[in-house]
Image (cartoon, rainbow, N blue to C red; front, top):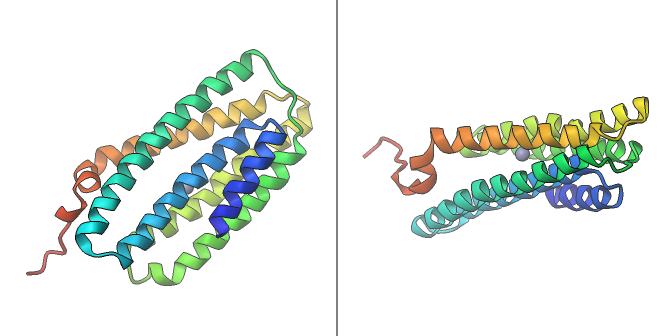
Length: 189
Ligand SMILES: [Zn+2]
């Protein structure tokens, strides 16, 4: 629910304030939400069903993120060429809210993360997301200080680049486990 709140508030505020950096972070949080949902399903569904679901989730998640990042990079480049005024206070305020909410998600995952490595990974990811959500805050502060809106598409480009980089790294490092999660065994008989 916290994640849904982050996604909706960032998307609405990002659209109204024409802030690409907020929109980029809202898309990122939507994909995180899908990931959390599938972790949850993996715990409650039978193994064969949950590994099939996880495989699709992983594929959709990484391909979806790459596609959306591509669209946002194209938009950001267009914005840099033809600047649009962005009110700096909106990404600042909403970014701070999103950072606080991501910290809340991480706090909720802390206790169960001590017993499960998958949840631990999600916990670490959400801690990192506190910082990512502060990127629109930095964009808003720079716009407020300098009066120049190009900081918004610039920061959106940086977030998109970070998402592409971390997705590529993840897929390259664990492509077999991502496509065939049932091959992951615990090492016991
Ligand atoms: Zn994330």
